[in-house]
Length: 374
Image (tube, rainbow, N blue to C red):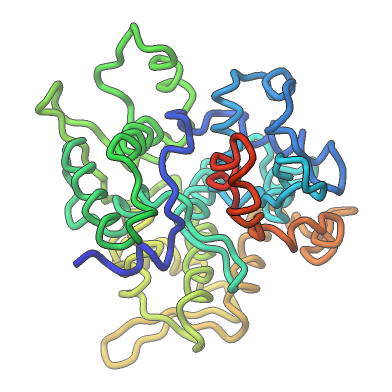
């Protein structure tokens, strides 16, 4: 049987990226335009001039819309006017923290920010109202795949099996959608060994996908014999603060206690070790020096099992450690608290509360909008 965590941890969304992996500048540009539209949120992704504002083609507008949601940088809710079928995108506080004008790294110049986004992509937000992972195909390959070397066809087969065994029949996508997910995942993380010069965007995708810097996926061989390898190694460009943030963030979602074993953090589906492809010794090696400097976090050893222990709320500790790494963003003049941000964007409180299917089913194009809602 497939791991039940897939249905618990993810939303059944497939091929919403229009085959485009996230590119340099997309997330910053989207956040800037959405914030510019004011505190009511933005319908930018539905506007006729969206390609001009974002500087991309129409299909890329749809891709940007998807990726901002998948990275938990926006939440969407129906337009307050029931006759308007557009959805309103509101920027999340974490988006402002990272990409705002006083944010941590608006242009994603620090590779650690890419690791952070990778974690946000594959994980769920804390709390019952937090957004789940919106890329189940990615979740399967990073968290549930039992092997590191795999062909494209084997990826498709594995994801298809997990999806069929985890979701209700009406949530299972067409086979072509899973194939598109696999193609996009490869473009996102690995250099194409055989780019097609006749394929629009093929060469651009190689140059413009920042997540290839993470070194998580490598290609071996050519043609039908090509194999993709998910690497497992020391992550020299992964900051200890980002990894420790991910560990505490994960702990806040899966344990109600004050500790979590390092074996779980390294090996459990959904945990940082799987997301970052790091074994337990490598994970410990990275975070141990940083933990030694923390008052409320420590590594303990009991009966041969090493654990990460914390003396305060792990989610709060996670943000304290991450914020310190980026120069105390939250202390900068005028930077809002998370509560102040929610008051500024009240649509965040209603995100995920979509229109009823029967209300929309009579309207042209309604099914597409239902699929796109969060």
